[in-house]
Image 1 (tube, rainbow, N blue to C red):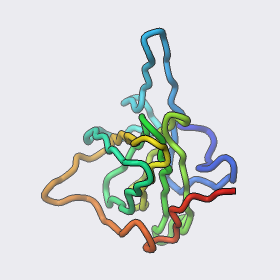
Image 2: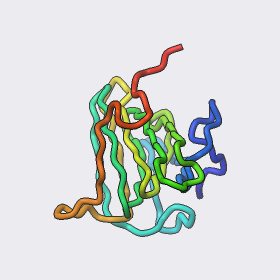
Image 3: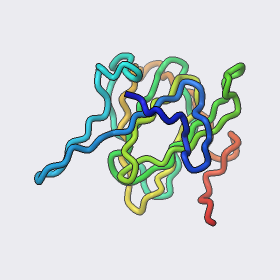
Length: 166
């Protein structure tokens, strides 16, 4: 079930971009380790259909951004390390047009973030070790006609990837 809190950044209370959903993931530990469910077909608020599953490794300090999909919905979970996932709503007429959401995901925050189509997204590895982000999109990747529309990671959208100390 989706997280009842509709805030991307609880500390600053930024409202979620329209269509974004989150799910707090539960670890089930025992003496052997733990199990963590990511996405189930009976997650009525999140699951639409299965496209594929992949993992993306990102080295410390690297930014993988920006892109959006016309059709695909992404379901991101960071299972190793930590990333700062950033979403930017540039959809004309969206009730949250111009909004930016930041999510800090990974070993210190087990959360799934569902990114609707047409919303720019990207992440930065913020841990001292590489991060592993699992995605369960609702569409398979089409090698001959990718549903990806890209921008350069810096100076293209109103977001600064620099760390903010203080």
